[in-house]
Image 1 (cartoon, helix red, strand yellow):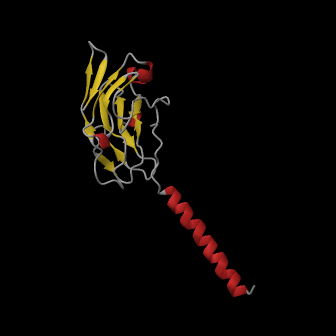
Image 2 (cartoon, helix red, strand yellow):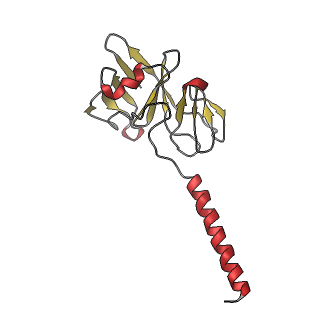
Image 3 (tube, rainbow, N blue to C red):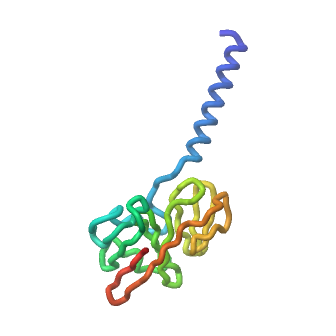
Length: 164
């Protein structure tokens, strides 16, 4: 093998490795567990009844409209300030002040599941660093569009959260 041919092959190999690393770091992260949620994803992925949830929690199935039963062990994290769970396409969180909030889980930049950061009062996309406030508004990009915000209404008599 001649030197010129060898250097050409080395250049192509290095280029392929760099391209692979770039593509890997820019992929959508479908990990459904946001930070600070104790590993609980809960939910029924959009229909019927699963322990602790009824209704539709997937955008693909129409309008988001589901109820979380806080007496279910699947949603015990939501009884604690600063905790969050992912249910279908939504993150439901309880802020440090005890208010329930719900936003779409997918970063509007490339669809990575965002994490709830209660100490910073925000949602963070670990993929490229976008941050969103508690209403889903963009704090900093690269995301340019806000996260969809959903109503999260706590019913203390039924011990449920209705998300719509």
